[in-house]
Each structure stands twice: as C-alpha cells, then as structure tokens.
Image 1 (cartoon, rainbow, N blue to C red):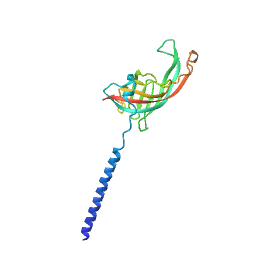
Image 2 (tube, rainbow, N blue to C red):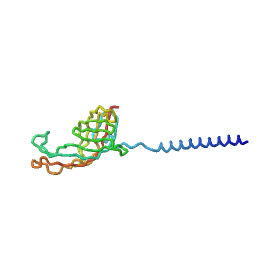
Image 3 (cartoon, rainbow, N blue to C red):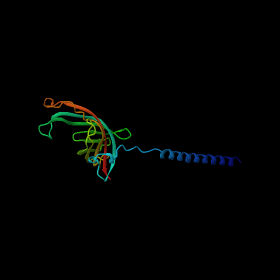
Length: 196
C-alpha cells in the first residue's frame, strides 16, 4: 500500500510539473509574440530621391548620432576668390536603436569605426536640399570598408538623415576673420547599407 501511494504521489507530482512547464511555456510564447521588434526610424520612400540607396542593398546597421562639427574660416578651395566656413573635422558617437554607443565618427576622411574593430570610409555622392536654415542636409555616401571583419565590413552606402543642427554659420567669416574657428553641435541618423 505504501509503495502504491508513493508511486501515485510521484506520478501526480511529475504530472503537475509537466503541466506547469507547458503552461509556463505557453504563457511565455504569448508574451513574446506581443513584443514588437524595434521600429525602423527611416523610410526610403520618404527621403529625397537624391539620397536614396539603390535597389539590391539591405540595412546593416541603424544608428543615431550626437556630436560636434569643427569649422574654420578659410578661403574656399572650390570657389576661387570666396571665403567661408570650411568643415575641418566631425566628431560624434553613434548609438544603436537600444541606446548603446557602437560607432565613433571622425575625419577627415569621414570614417566610422565600430566597437568590434570594423570600419568604413565614406565619400559623399549626393546631398538633398536642406530642411531648415541651420540643419545639415541629408547626405548619401559610398562606403569603402576597412579590412577588419565585423558589422561595417561590407558596408556599401551610408545615409545621413533626420538631421538637426550643425550649420548655424551665421557668425562673420570675411577676410578679417580668416583663421577663426567655430564649433556647432548636431544630431543625425546614420543608416549603413550592404549588398543584399
């Protein structure tokens, strides 16, 4: 009798554990199915056509940047006889969609270096018309990845979108101001693309 009682108790305990595991797993699956992936903050169809990435590419990394741009009042190399603010160097931290700093932006040349050691150098190919007098224009650059493996290894395009600030260049820049320096803060999203 004692042996039968122990067997029944062990069976009922095992059944209860099994039911609890199945119930817990089902509850976890329901809870997880309600968790949406992080939303994309960009849409190609809402961008100026000049800065859209050609078909055949997929997003490798989405980031949000906050940084500084350092300018100097100089003779304009592109337009003889003119003087203006020339970008000397950018400096920004890029955060992924979870808020983690994953990339450092520096230059020249424009270089993005991931925390995993991979990097890409960008060459500007297009600018969209600026939205707001003090905001940087949206930009499209082609990418020349470095040799180190990682997230940025195969990046072919870099988009700069959702810009805010960076171009409040209202301070005087004339012949008398040559050599003056100006620092502006800016924000932007950088979207890194690779071949599909």
